[in-house]
Amino acid sequence: MNPSALTSPSLLTVDGLVGVVFLIMVLITVVGGLIACNSERLVRSIAGLVVCFIGVAGLYFFLNSPFVAMMQILIYVGAVAVTISFAIMLAAPEEKKKIGPTSILAGPLGFITAALITGGFVVLALKTEWAIHNKLNDGSMKSIGLQLLTDYSMVFELVSIVLLIAILGALVIAREGRKN
Amino acid sequence: MRLTLLNVIIAVVLAIAFAAVNAAYLVWAERRGAARIQRRPGPNINGPFGLLQPPLDGIKLMAKQLTIPGGADRIMFIIAPVLAMFPAIMSFVTIPFSDSIVAKNMNVGVLMIFAFASMGSMSLLIAGWSSRNKYSMMSSVRAVSQAVAYEIPMLITAITVVMIAGSADLTEIVHQQSKSILHWNIFPLLGNSHNILMPFSFLIFFMCTLAETNRAPFDLGEAESELVAGFHTEYGSMGFGLFFMGEYANIVIGSCMTTILFLGGWGCPFGLFPGVWWFILKLYLLIATFIWIRWTFPRTTIYGLLNLCWKILIPLSLFNLLFTAGLLKVF
Image 1 (cartoon, each protein chain N blue to C red):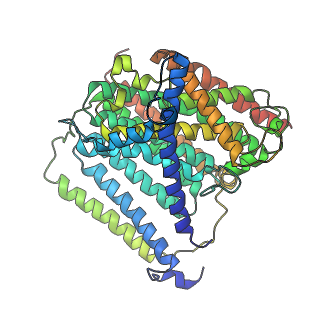
Image 2: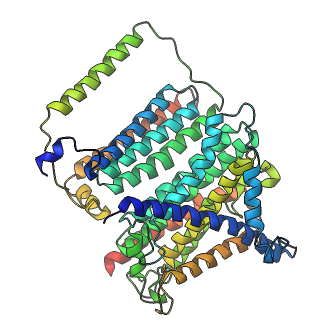
Image 3: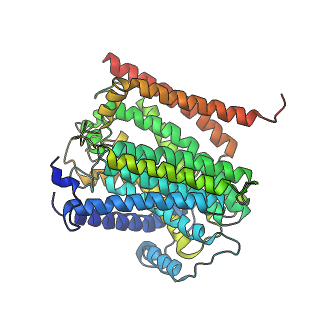
């Protein structure tokens, strides 16, 4: 890619418009995340989470991987968010978010941690020499499948172990306080 | 291509128009069909054959006030019907009606349709929850448990077809079935797989479409005798109208997918004059079957419904997936 792409292009060119679309997607993601964190009712939080997922799917689509974008919507919006809201509605449909007893330090400490993490990411993003790849492959299902089962099979297996641990953890939590 | 943005806007407007007109006139077709099947008069007063009924109904719905029940979650209550319509419109963008009539062909077209179809259950949940009504709540829980369950065999069956075609591109899937009726994915004789189980796959897919669109005999979500009107009990005026249109748009999309995946899309059964007219013909034959089934079969129970899915359809479709994989490996 030519170096001129690294400077911010004018708004009226194709690159500029693409940038605007990118910013819209980022905005959707951030707004969704804020709704998810800050709303009073749990179901609204879920809706915010869905908005956030859709924004992330848009970012994937923007990054030339429609397959990952569609999987993001199919799995996270269609399955995960529905399952979460299902669980919430079955358990406590009207309950407001409970805030447990917190110490005075919880707020500032949380803020400092968040600021450190954000600052770290910003520094990393600005300092890193980004290698601009051309497209690795065409992003089709076939090439993704081949890559997953050859070059990245270790990562693939590790992810499935993470999922297994998540399932076991859920079982352990659900088991607690139950006799027999 | 130049003017891509303009093309996309035109495509979306056409998709909305297609969905809306279809929804309006499918209601008419359904009521006429119901009347014919049950030997009673349908809408036959306004215009020839009652054809003016849908626009009049639309005007009536739009003229009504949108009432929001006290204690309801206002924002979510208004968002829910929009969410019911939005995925349906998005799905129309990638459906190929013929070789050239497709707004945006994607190499993951199958996935895109199912991804947006899966968003529909979210709108049901939000509608049921935000109405603050026990009937709506019960109904949305039922409808979603049904939709989530039937999504699984539907996706597995679709993956079987994708494996046979070797592509998730809807146009490519149709091209592979284009030679004659014997190449259609519903028939196993010619084509890639020689899979004798494909007719069962077709049946599974069709049943899942019925269940996913909350149609009788699987319309537990709107069981009038138990739940008033289900998740849209509290909705009046265009809020109800949008749910209704979304339902019929989903029926059209389900029939489109059945046509594309199993019935050869826009291909002619005898290899003559392939084109959009064959697609439309197959589409409306399927929709007619939907209407026929709705007014012929009684509603099942929720246990029967879920047992059918988890104990019969999912094992069968999984077996068919493995069988097809084996066949593709052998041949």
